[in-house]
Amino acid sequence: MPAPLSFVRRFLDALPGDDRTDREPRPVVAALWSRVQPTPVRAPRLLAWSRPLAQQLGLDEARMQEPLTTQVLAGNALWPGMDPYAANYGGHQFGHWAGQLGDGRAIVLGELRAADGSVQELQLKGAGPTAYSRRGDGRAVLRSSLREYLCSEAMHALGVPTTRALSLVATGDDVVRDMFYDGNARPEPGAIVCRVAPSFLRFGSFELPTARGDTALLRTLTDFTLRTHFPELGTPGRDAYAALLHEVAARTARLCAHWQAVGFVHGVLNTDNLSLLGLTIDYGPYGWIDDLDFGWTPNTTDAGQRRYAFGNQPGIGLWNTARLGEALLPLVDDDERVVEDALAHFQRVYAEAATEWFGRKLGLTIDPQRGDEQLVQQLFDWLVAQPTDMTLFFRALGPLLLADAAPAALPESLRAVFYGDVPEAHAAAGHAWLLRWWTRVHQEPRPAATIAAAMAATNPRYVLRNWLAQTAIEAATNGDLTVLERLFTALQRPFDEQPQFAEFAQKRPEWARSKPGCSALSCSS
Ligand code: AMP
Ligand code: MG
Image (tube, rainbow, N blue to C red):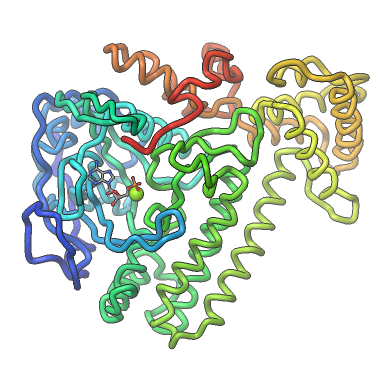
């Protein structure tokens, strides 16, 4: 039998909870969590689990193979020391204050002392109703759970800060969803993901106490957050509160820059979906950029407003940071300069991080004196003028540096990343840009081969393209898990060539252009 696991109770012991433990939807005031048991499911099956994460947590192969583990990851059993709860938080949704939201279908089972010494919350998403479920059923469908499982681990392998996913369990129960919100609700297979993070605190966790005028609760939460997750910012007090906002602003800015660099579109950047630790959190109708389009969003609910479109993410990160700042105002004597400073810091950090990322993607240390910023801007102007695959374009650039001379025309490897026919004038403009870039990179102090290698470690070959996730979903729905497994394996090494997985590096096939799940996703999950 595997050795017992060790659970700690940081959140439950330090923060006030709700007296009630039932699942009746209700406002929960003066409390940050409600104790709740997961609702058992009929026939759980462990479809997939992340070996790298299990290892980090100290859950060895024998433990993962045990029948009890599947029961725990399905919400049918608990490991000793687990004490499940749902967290209380609010949020701004699509620009409007929405009041109390909370974990309507997520239940934290416990805080595990992991093998690597860290403490990690294990949270089931889709484990049944809680006090925060409002009109929801507390469940999740297989398609959205599989997407969250795959993308969490793919993002981590890419180096993007994210909550993790330990497991994907099929529940054996159906869940009724109206996928297109068109009155055609139908049963779909249910599933549960076990998410893992040091904390699932959100901006909205801080907004809710302030919106209710409960400064004492806000202070308790913020003091806990500082002590537990940001000890380097000093003992709780006005300066530490300001430093916390400053730090979260910087992390969020860096996260936004990283999303832009890899072409990730979150889809629902409401303040309840922004992590206080600067992690990517709550994978719903997210998507990956195929052809570079700053106005693109995968989220059909946002198709009109496009508030959370690719190009808007940094601005929304800033807007959300302003909401967090307002929430913390009561702790800094309502001094709005604290918030203004943090927002200015966000903008500085974002600009620096984005410049650094796009410089690295192009093999350059950006130098405004040399006109590098114009070079980057000219590239964007060119890339958006005709549909061009963002991931493949950047990946194809590096190898060009290995030739003795600049290409005499737009090379085949770059033409291959266009979607559809491209006018010759556009190809010629691309070639002209390429010559400027090639000349500029050869002025860098590092040898071209070193730069090409660094570019290959920056520009991924494999990202979780929308149509790939959909292919894995369709196979899994028909009982075939091999696509999911192969995709998971390929995405563990996103920067390596991996010829055996070449099919996953293809640009979006024509059939996927307008297919639901491949280009557009509803929030129904
Ligand atoms: P999301 O848009 O996924 O971030 O969810 C927003 C809010 O709705 C959160 O409070 C969720 O817990 C809640 N929610 C979403 N789906 C469900 C569901 N099926 N049952 C209960 N609550 C849900
Ligand atoms: Mg959410």
